[in-house]
Image (cartoon, rainbow, N blue to C red; front, side, top):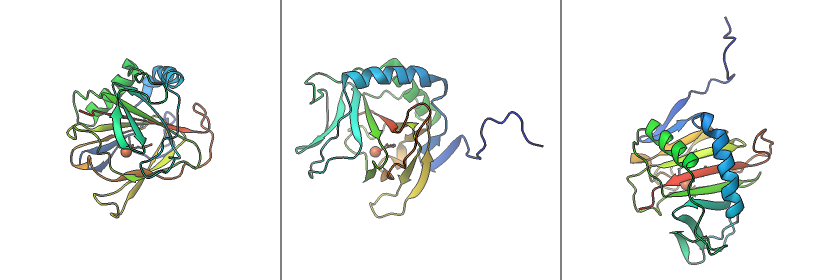
Length: 216
Ligand code: MD6
Ligand code: FE
């Protein structure tokens, strides 16, 4: 008999292990979505998205901003966490409780209690934007996980091994999904395939990704 009360038509599990210490929590944002989107709008007004240039001179296809004590920045001098937004000369907007609590709740569900991030990198993907394979290794505290919240258009997340050329697995990340990433997987290579065209009912023609980090 069909389940008249089923809320999804696909067979994706709520929880999927990506590797040791890494888990995909589907729909983990849940009821926190409204508060999170309201606060996100305020942050983006104070610190608008911008396309950073890598130390190698390439302009990134993903547009970025930050909130929290420090923000991730890239320029000709290299990558670093900086308390000052170079575009405004002011500190980054504070990390609001709505964002903090989603991150802490997801981390706990992923097995990391008392996650206290001091940075949230906010990435905006328009169709065609991508993130090349990389490791997140600019943080001093590699004992803390990274918590990654996906909003808007679905994307293909590439999860590789511990070398750039190790084979990767592909995972579809949709609106409200959270990846928690730590332990033995903390330095795994990962990236995002070019974003397909589309229109999301809440977010429009874009994907926004929040990555929460404890940098020190
Ligand atoms: C993104 N994410 O999903 C880019 N990093 O847009 C990341 O680079 C990332 O999702 C570390 C852990 C989870 C991530
Ligand atoms: Fe990353």
